[in-house]
Image (cartoon, rainbow, N blue to C red; front, side):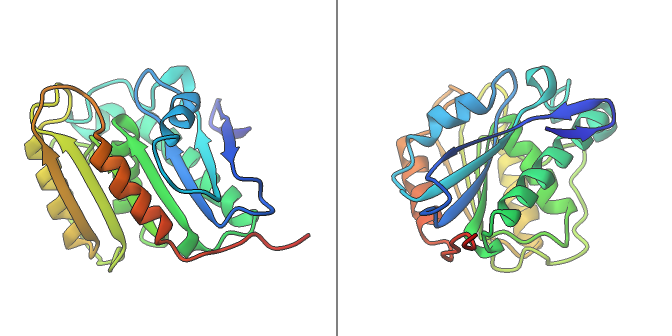
Length: 219
């Protein structure tokens, strides 16, 4: 249990036992969902030997308002979520995974929170990021100060007429991440539902499988 202010952030684990896990994935769920939803979704990745670490949002939501509103309206929740991501990453590192063997993966609100984490944490470097139907948080485009994501593969996938995530924001997010140095793979498929395509899971599988192998240290 991870504590931030008056909230406790639980971290759920599943996947390959540490004795044989080669990769770690920090999985961040969407609004109204939970780590168990991400566990079910993880079955769409065709990668073995993965250990998952998923923080649980208080009351099922990382922040109360739309990610398109000014960031100040969601700041308290964002701060709690960022603590959950950081501590989940710390647990993976404590379990012996090399940073190059750790990917972050988020869906919807979780993808938005992870984008904020990637852009605001210049000292954190992952092997890859998989962001499904999300974008940067706030009403104005973030200013990139450093190219701290240089060459980090970032997969961005969304739906053209998604009811919650405008395609324009996904394009803008790709631009901002590219300015930060990331190697962005962007694709927006036609449709009007808040879904993840088979192509997105397939490409995400390739990205995870391409991580640098980092087995946990032996006891």
